[in-house]
Length: 342
Ligand SMILES: [Zn+2]
Image (cartoon, rainbow, N blue to C red; front, side, top):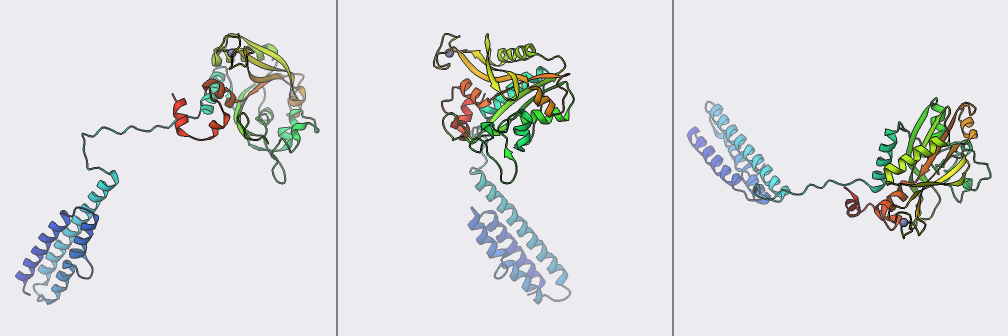
């Protein structure tokens, strides 16, 4: 083959190869065109390369240059067509600017998260900061430092999830109160959200793991008046409650202790299904921090006093959003979450 025959053969292969590659309608057609022209064994470009051997020494540089041009061009066309076919396959549509936009899916916050965030917002405005602590605790932080006697039923393995060896899963967020008191000097005002664990059956109103939120305020001269006024302000802001009531109660870590109820917002206190006919809804437990708790954490109980409260955001979410069964909160069904989302 002389030089002019070689150059003409190169032109033909480049022209026919370009047509075949550019007109390939799908991945299979493109692969067939690639094998025909750029294939390692029988491809026509390979044949053109082998034909270089028959070109005379002085014509070889010109022929080699033309060969490289043809091969480079066909390889580039193949890559271009390949990515165009892939784009069309993954998007499922050819580019069509007249199609309506697809609705963007945004997700939604869990109702318990919504409740916790709103409570945090109210207490932040009242000067509280957020504190957190470990979910795996020692018996001392979970019970001992909180004035539980060692024979208290809550320490029993029927109620508490003990870890192998040492430690347990905290049954309330109160250990974080102890850790905060150990770490900081009063004045202390913290809000403590977190998950807690009990050895409970999973039924319509109980779960073995659930969220809790506690508050703690310790300073000189703090009295029950501070507790009542702060919690009343919270109830007014969060529940729109016009009236609250405090009922005497008992917790090992507070003295005196009180349960706080808010007047039912649905019936206005006359009694309905939501408040089980009582006109009141129980929302939290509270009390003055027991001096033994302050002393256990190294705080001088002669100088400082404080109050604390604790409540369950899941129960609040259930009454706020009218959720019939607590287990719905654990199902992770986005259709349910979308109903609650704002
Ligand atoms: Zn009611």
